[in-house]
Length: 169
Image (cartoon, rainbow, N blue to C red; front, side, top):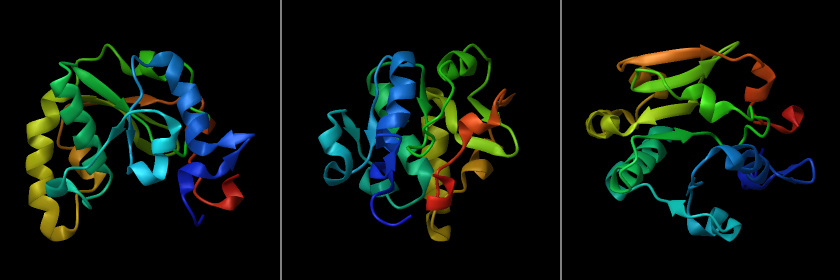
């Protein structure tokens, strides 16, 4: 798409702001995994990838969120990419209440980053990320498949549409 993808226009706002608007009524707090020069102006607390885990793919951001949640004594976090502006308004409720380490949706494909992650995963995720460093990072589905997972069928797969190109707009 070019440029800073989260800030691409979307229905009178931006992709990231539309995604936040869908999640905010469902969440105790919103944190953004980004550098201050990218999204700091939105006014939400930022979570950073620690240098030891930076540049290892999207799971570096999940790791940062889990680390923050452990410090806040939360049992889990829910993550979402910034480019899913039509997420269900009951997403968090639907992900909650399962006896699993990871709960995520699937439809035509898996949506592995629109997910509930138990904070108890932090040590295993850190170990897996470090082990994957020589390969340039850790594939999300590879890690997920090594854990106790519940996959929930998306009632409306269009709600999980990723906006990855101008054609998707």
